[in-house]
Image (cartoon, rainbow, N blue to C red; front, top):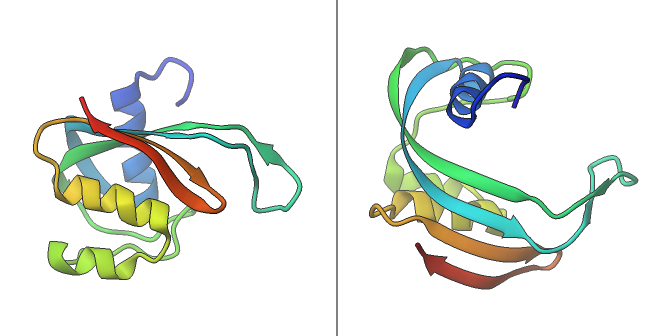
Length: 122
């Protein structure tokens, strides 16, 4: 988030910056808390436990565009989306989004090795 931005504004801006599309936010869908410190991609920097939020958004316009933070962006059918993801944490998160029924999913996990410690709907 940038100074002066609320969460919804930050989400809309990040989606535009990373994909080129404009959205409206429909609903908070999930909260995920990591339970362990990890090491950043540089192999040195320690990353503290964090909280991730997933939202359901509606597309309102714009063209998919590869920008600074993305190497590829595509539209794909829902039934093929899970096949495109191999990382267990991201696969779990996408499964929860695809099955969103209106209840917010809360999950706590460790990433190395991946283990889901707690999962419930709020």
